[in-house]
Amino acid sequence: MLGGGIAAAVIALTAGLCVPGSPAGAATLPAVGSASGIATHYVLQSGGGNCSYPGPPANHMFVALSAAEYHGAAPCGSYLQVKGPHGSVRVEVIDQCPECKSGHIDLSEAAFAKLAPLRAGIIKVSYHTISNPPLPGPVGFLVKNGSSRYWLALVVMNTGNAIASVQLKTSAGHWLKLTHANWNAWIAQQGAGPGMTV
Image (cartoon, rainbow, N blue to C red; front, side, top):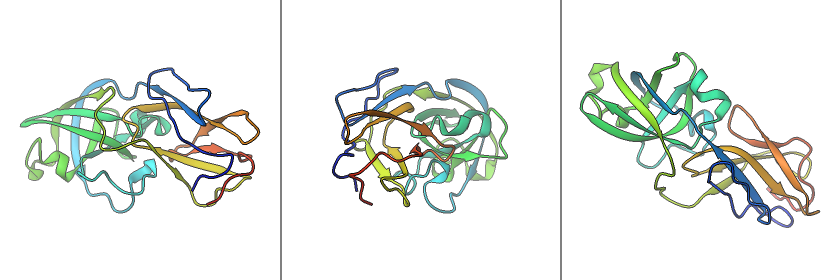
């Protein structure tokens, strides 16, 4: 729960834009771009992948990227259009595939099945980042367990685009730039001051 002086209400999702004057601001960056390579499929064991979301998207159309393309969680929340042998599918980036090399994406079984039978195992694909995709709901913030006035970790959800930076307006009226962790939390190591309840 966000309360008191820390209220994350507005986030900007236009490249390079921050919204001073709103309690939280963010700037976006390009994620994967365009690539050709291969795709495999997997089953997400629990939660919402390395991007720390509470769970997978409701439609189960998601993807895990290689460490190089995951780039320290930079593309979390962005979407790719993936084209395969029998069609194309839109997927949300929610996870990292540590064993994948650059150009190898790991799709959810539901997404892979839109492109080829699961028994194919590995298929050739091309994929590109989608800018400003339609979203299933509004932007949201998840305050991670352990957050307090002394240490704060936020996960920004349902952004549609990769987020380049997040700033938070503290109860004292100062803008605090948060740092991005590999598990997709935006962190204030010294906290953001009073007003936080979890």
